[in-house]
Image (cartoon, rainbow, N blue to C red; front, side):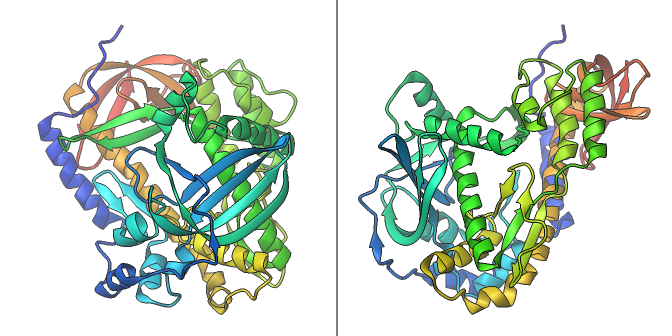
Length: 472
């Protein structure tokens, strides 16, 4: 049995890592700051007072601990044998003037980037973490979706209104999950019920979720960096169902108006399904019949073969993108993993496209004309989001490479136990459990996906984020 290694790099490697992370911002052309005009607009921006006052509704937010850019607040209550779900979204369209300096800066960014050495926000913090954020005990304008659900969790009525709200509680995932598990009172008391019902609705539609464990880079209070591997908590899945329900409602409104922007993903083709079937058979957990979403939901998360299966399944979740339309509904409208038309409409503080989705949805729900700025700029949004997604993907993968190298720097020449999670010819990808590192290397013929092997760390280059392993 190998000794458990610390997941924090020594000081020399940490210093080299800090330099590399700073250089990474330049490498991905990350924005360094906001223009003075955009900062001035954000500081002075005020939303008009909404006609509807919902401050008596006890909304609560639910986010990772420490979050300040709070896009959503929820409230759930029983309604006969069903439920009423209210989902309030930060009213960013009211704060950002189309065509202004703030709008221009946000379009250049596309989304908030979460770098290891600090956040690169979509909007200035005075807006995203203060004036527009749904912070507790503050009056805030919001776009409030109200859903009537039947006893099975199906949506039977929806409305969208601009309202003034006041959140009562700032919840985080870990603490709220612990409260629910212990039976303690919490504003999220009904979230498990509604979340499970919505997950059942997803299964009936033929939807599928991947839910791979996350390798997260964290910056500790002393300035050092580490990697934490975590599997999403049940409460995160339940909370995500509220966002998915809202995104599907927004998509329907936009399809109704024949104006909008959808998040689409094609159904995997027969070749992808056949490859996945072969991979699951090779791992001894064959998918033979039924929908692939049901198969993934039924996997034993404690089985060591599950991680390689989920990695193989990631090939079924490719091709997601944005489709904008104005006047004619596109031929492809479905997000295959959700098994329904879907739009991003719940995170406008952190994602650019949501501002368009919300502005269109509100106009359609009110029976009003869609704003001219939406028509004028809608076709540009997919390219803006594609560019920001590429930047975010590069940032995340390169950050993980750099931190992994720093963690491994003192262990050159040492052995590690690893699980083969993917194989492509003579090479493959292995997952080391301690520290949580993924690496690529040449494999012997006997090392199939799912096998546990011993590897040796040959070399590390922290500045480049490169590590070299070989089978022991």
